[in-house]
Image (cartoon, rainbow over all chains, first blue to last red; front, side, top):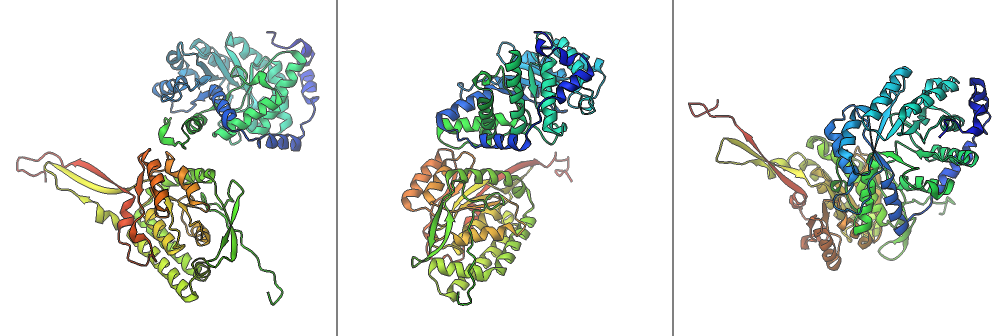
Length: 315
Length: 298
């Protein structure tokens, strides 16, 4: 895939051209966006549709542990959970991936060999992204060498917010080049971008630079994925495919803890970009505690009894 | 009103997780006094309200069971203080609900406040009564201590809308459990007002959750709920109690059956029966250390 879609080759020719392009994107109707996201959140999804949504959501989870206290044992436990989320019910689908820090990628890869669950690794001085480009690229190389199938990079928000868009662009291009066959997810940290207009600009910037996925946030700041910012990013990937034919994935991350929330996001996907994205190749949830809630709801549907946290693993 | 003032009607609401939500279902039902005259609309909770209450109770359990017994006693005493300040309101609600005269209703409310104080005093004494050091043949200290069971669903008595209600809630939370209370279906107003008292008396949100509605509709999901540790069937009739007991057995819930002594006016001395109904005994063995040549480690 070319790093920049031909239709937009001019836009990325220089810093000023890129700025002109990004600032030329239509402004976001904040009230309309939030109202649309809220109204789609009121859909009632029940019975068989709910069972389908729960299984789909489980299969879309990037089961994540990004703590300073991560140990190889914890990563292996998480990997086991990703392969068999509910050991009492083998019909439960696998999660999409396990998401860890680069130094744990080898452990995760060894634990997931042959399971079909992918290894995602954050890189580029996650979560702040405040490091020299060389350091970031080395971080990515390490993760890929350790067996990561997917790389979650953070953009340089400092450069983005001060208007140095080309720097952000070139950094993403450089990271993409290091990824090789690994898919690249670009994290914008929407909670730090201040405005919806900035989120739209960041989305386009990421897609132009060759992201395979655009991802809302790191989960390390106050505001993470919200229905509104995810809807905005879904609109961006929809428009991008219309204009270039290239499909890009979306990954909301952080703050999605309940089945109800997850189903709201799936409704957003279905209503905004349609069934093409209702697949774990194109849509993911970055989450950890969400999986337990999905499993409890799944048990409720299959047994008719409400389940409790004693019946799922503590992680 | 003779002075031309329009009265302000009270919207009775549930008490869940320290907040006052309406029923998730949006339903209400008419509550009448003992003669059939309309009093107010009460929320008719659904199984989802019950589920939310379980989540709130579970969340509150760690903090409440971990609080010192002394602290729990202080908070329960504070509840009694708040009840004392609203005696007239409760007396009016009890008189309406149970068809009592003003003076009799006032006496019932006084008895309920006294009952609450009585249970408040038990928080830091029950351990000495039902726990203790056990003599064992070996160089060990062997200590048994009572521990709270966990989240308890309480079916409040149907007839005694306030004294009976207090008599089933206070012992459950005094020992460190958290409670989901299904108020009397016919007379829920004193229970819903009790929620307002609890909210203003330092009791952490979620320790007591009060639902009104059809008892059978709410009790069924609670009895089968995997995350409820015990159920008190006081407010269930014989048929419902049997059904609930079967559902509760499925997940090994601790169950308190309806007792013959719990019918009537609830004025008798309750004893410690209800306090111990929702306690587990934890026993620890602690080595005393090797005995020296003299036969003593000291």
